[in-house]
Length: 503
Image (cartoon, rainbow, N blue to C red; front, side):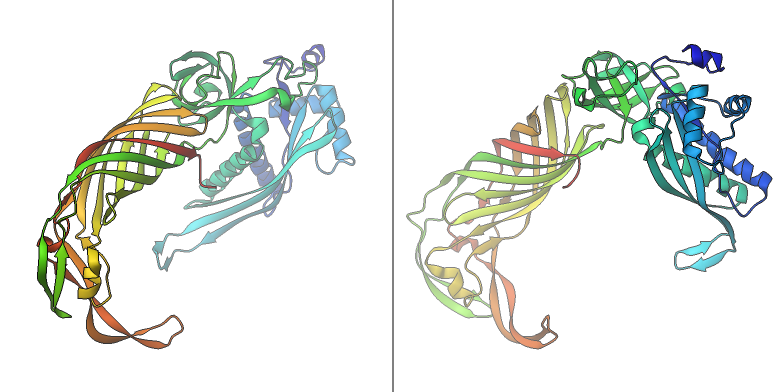
């Protein structure tokens, strides 16, 4: 501490490292004066972003020049044994880390306006900047990180194009060294699902940012070297910033409400705010589908295969009172808005001869009763489905000339609503829901061969002859179950797994 003060560097926070950004080199295709302007501009933009991270004490560029000059040190890439000079300079003036950079390419090109397939492109300047950036550790006298980054910009004026490209390059540098420059804060208080952080936009916190909550065990940070023992550091939660003031900010707890505590460190990190999930559920069903108890010989006709005499005996069929629904769904859940939407397929098992399938799209809201553990989830859905019915004695196969074996109902609209409870235990989510669905049908058809031959192309480019088929209606009065009404209230249980993205 005495050495730092003696050299003119007043530390802002004693447990922070001091960092300096050295002038970049290598800017070409312009005068020496202009090159210095652009190189200094990049340096200042990177310094600004490091300051916003609140991770280091950042040495002012002009103060750095003054201190180096006092010790007759000039850190440029032309100095022999550059790394040894940086290590020595850092120890003398009290800098722990240096950021250095070299431009490997910079170009500014003017393009006249032109037309392309997407429309007219206005005249513009195109700037392309490439640089190699390194992070030098004074204590170890070595580079600990290096990255190559590129930035492009197209703007109507040269100045604006250069400024935008420099901004992008500075952002890319910080993104590449995220583990060192991530914005940090501490949890000041926790109120249900909201946390209060001790820093605001004056120190780099931005609305919409996401933070990882870090738990550090005792002894995780070496008091002398500042080195972190990764074995004593663990990620225990995530926070989404919803409100930012100059000196504090508020965030919504996305996960980890039972593991995070006041005083814990939060560190800026790009955390997905959308989960993808897959769920499977089962529901017993109480319904009433009455059979058509007829017996005798009946004539069934269609315009393609003519009239058929069929023997029918449905007297032994009973009312269907029980069934089940098996559902599989894929959904996308927004962790910030607590809304999910998805697609689902419901398979109805009703009897040996009767089954149904309904495809759905649905929208659901998740109201947090106990954050990160218990949710009330109302949902609405809309879908299309049909029922399949297999008649005894091969009746359908006979009248369709072997083309079909079952009757199918016409596709019908299905409306559904449900209210559920979701309990989250680790990566698994258990659900219990009460549901209502409206769905009924009484019109039936089947596919039949028409007797006409048509030619079509095969995948190999050859031609083949196939017999045409068509759909024809079937008299519901000759079906085992002439009308099927699946509208009902039922209870459903299920299990789901959510991931931040597809794997």
